[in-house]
Image 1 (cartoon, helix red, strand yellow):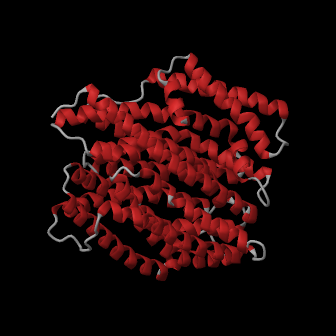
Image 2 (cartoon, one colour):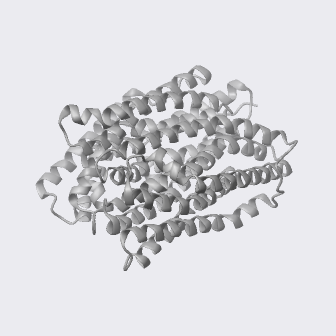
Image 3 (cartoon, rainbow, N blue to C red):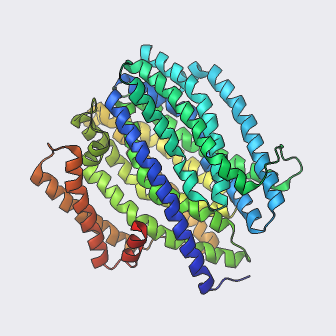
Length: 530
């Protein structure tokens, strides 16, 4: 069955609104995350306890990332959303219940193994940690593991809600997790030393994880009607999900391996490198979430619900993909330029208080500048991966993820450890080398994803003329902001400095995009603001 332009226009408009709802939910969650990060920095700065906390959180977080949102989105949502499109409600309930039971069973076993094997995990992930830092990291990991399992179940809730196009709740649910951690810091931070406060905060994270699940369950049960719990024996769709799950799981695993290689390398850098890298990644993930994940999340169920023959489905995917790439680039390119030129202002506005000083903001900026290398590739790559998942192809992204990890590992070692020594620069700048190497590898992965998909569905991509005009506009905005920064100096309150520089940056950028004729900017910005 074909789709006319009059039919697709309302559908695209609706998907755009859903992407904005997802972005709004992510924005609220990220804002609370930044507040949490600021409060954390106030109490911990870039101390050894902060290094231990960040490293510990990454280890059980592997469980969440392997079984959580990304994997479920790729394997579960395409099948479940297609069942909803075909109005097979009873079968969709069976599938949802079976996936919940399988996740619960597997994650419970992995939590037990993880808690018992924690010392071995520390030796594998952060071998550079010694003495008290290592012992604190072990204690924290054992507390974090149960919370990670709860967040996996939260991801199951997100998969149900997103398939029913209920994006706002699923992406605002992490707000309550952040609130629990902030409350823990404020309550216990008044009298506990850094090491004990880190342990208190880990328990606050577990409580917040439980609340994040609880807040979604009422709406999930209303969407499902009932949840028949079983292991899904004899249900073909469950087998399809598990079949798709394996390559996505491996793909997610190799990508996570890249992050743990970064942690492993950073543990050999001078003190504060792990904490600085984690702070930079928090800021880096803001545009990735708002402009990459939100659009990809809204498009995945829409793409998965496409009906028709192979050519008609390919045409729908091309049209959606090209429109969404432009929306992503419009906001991601100035974000990358901001990280590169104004990262100290951004880091200071979010993090600088208490034990987190101006020098720490500059160090985070240096790491953020490396992140800017691959920001656009990472955000657009997520959308291309969603297109493959909508086509129920989970193996192609896996192959390219392996290429990315191999590149990240090799370049990461070179840029983080030998290169600073060869150049005679501060060894701490090896953390910036880690983010820059990941960005280079991200571009290679993105180009491979695009080329292969274009062979399958036809030409897609962000036109070079539009990309050039967006980069030129971002450079003009950065030049204006840099001029203001030089004129007023940096010794102002971080919020005053950020307002004085980032507001002109944004105004000049959007004025230039309009003058340079980037089509649809006014309408798109107006819809985003509304």
